[in-house]
Length: 218
Ligand code: C5P
Ligand code: MG
Image (cartoon, rainbow, N blue to C red; front, top):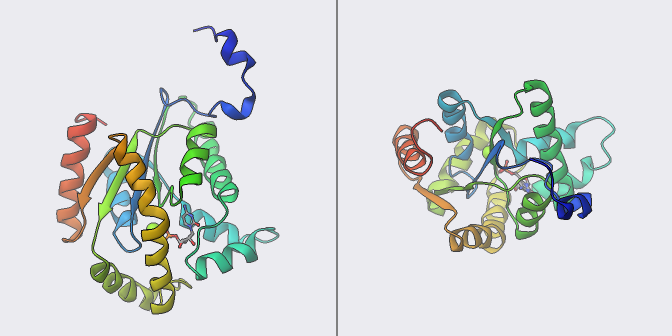
């Protein structure tokens, strides 16, 4: 379809890089330790999504030799604070571009895990990268998440899987990330899954809810 004059006239930054007609983006949210990564791995296996974890991308950038953001990211992650969104949005866009260039079909399906954690990330990403379909939200009580994170901390090597950082991450989640979930919920764009049970049981509910929303072949 020929672009309208309005689209031609619009400044580039107001046009998302990817169209939601070609690219499916599901945001995946939940507190730290809610099981986002575990469930994303299941969905990748069964539905061929590309899994992009914002936290993993930030840790990779932190460790990349010569990164101008390395030290800044390190401090933010240890303190459980949200990294300035320009960095995270750009890392996600770069990762999506890599996948789309290799694939050639022009179509893509992404699980964007641990994002958006703050309203500015949500607005910026949807304006400049790609509007999302909805948020898949894993709802889990703090006590359960804390237990999981402390267990994971024995082997994860993560600088933020310790009692002090976990406390800060919970506070950031409640103060800064839950408003994002509420914002999308107000638009009817949240699929909520109870994440307290075993990984298999959580996954069963995840599949049922996603199939109800997207159809069997999503
Ligand atoms: O999702 P994950 O627990 O791996 O994120 C680790 C940390 O990375 C967060 O506590 C935060 O400091 C940073 N982060 C961020 N913005 C995101 C995702 C993660 O600043 N959207
Ligand atoms: Mg994770």
